[in-house]
Image (cartoon, rainbow, N blue to C red; front, side, top):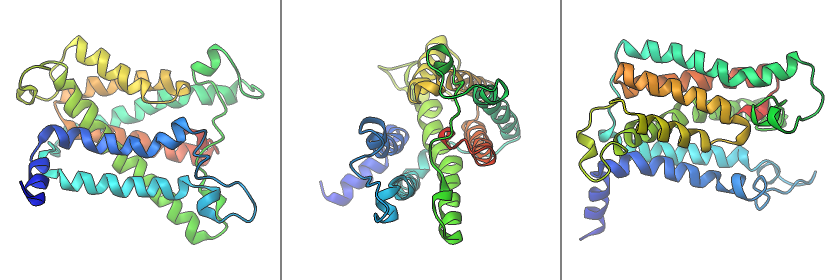
Length: 257
């Protein structure tokens, strides 16, 4: 089999189309998840160039463009049809992110000093001030480029790769692991698909976000079952991440995104 034939075979695989984009996307996050904030890439020194001081400023855009390339490569497999149900998804995105942001908002309202430990930490009642900050750049052009690329990643790429996998693939796969799960219509309800998909979505996030991710994941499952629309889930995720990014910028809570 020639290289071209192998590529075409991969491109025609519906399962790969739903799994590979998120798998590759997560590989880019491994340095931050397992190597203490990408210390292998980072050199925190006044004379260090920006790409060593803040490796996330180039790693995240690279992650986004690779994800976009994979989504385009597998595009024929995605059931992304626009319908009236996307407006319901957008509404639920605003509701879901409200629950996600509530704990850190409570941190401010309660006037807590420092970083709480114990149960408050795992409920997300934290300051969330340390994280991705486009304000590290003095140049306005660099600031806006960083900000636009960050929103592009959060609103477009993350929404697509995650919903295509969690709701487009995993919800089906869990209902017929040994058979042809692609014959199962999108959004078919079952307790196993709800519990596993929502639980896995929650565990894919940091512990501080577990509560918000569980509530948000439950609402997304509800949207999938009610609308039978993958696009509604993608729009829900995009609206949620857009609002989260705006909130992070407005209140300097860069640890949220």
